[in-house]
Length: 219
Image (cartoon, rainbow, N blue to C red; front, side, top):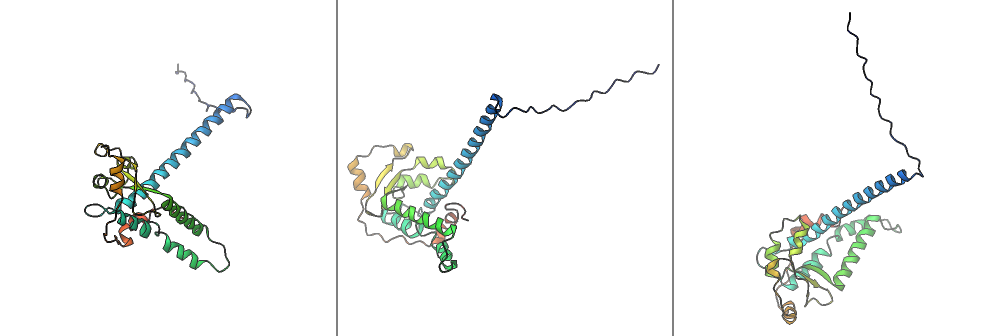
């Protein structure tokens, strides 16, 4: 007698459940998807923000002198002559390419906005790594130019174009070597300078690798 053949089991694909748009389950799924989308968007923005911050701090990292520290006068010179003018060539190209009577391009508008915003920030008070402070510069030299959290270890000062001869410590820095208490009067005296040091005049090429990444790609 021939052995009976066992019928093959055919697995049917499971049907995807479809919920009524107004049902409670559909509402729950919609909220879950919305939350995932918001989290993904927040993560993307946070990544871009950290990247932009790393670029900004990278500029000041490349401003560190080969030896020693900067004077306050030299730090102001770098900000006013290099940082605030880094988009001037692109702006000039956009203005030259624009026909008479034509509106500004999106790129020119963005560059104008960046320049205006940063100039105003420098006028009212700009927080920067304290490149006049030996311990801070020593720590800054060890930065890998990617980890933004490392910057929290550094001391920051607030400087302004209105009063370029003085500065205020805005962040003491989280590194243990910077935690020592300093009397307010000593801080003020240390930050005020009347030195006659020659202004630091560096070619923009020194900062070229960092300047190319500033503010992200422009349209």
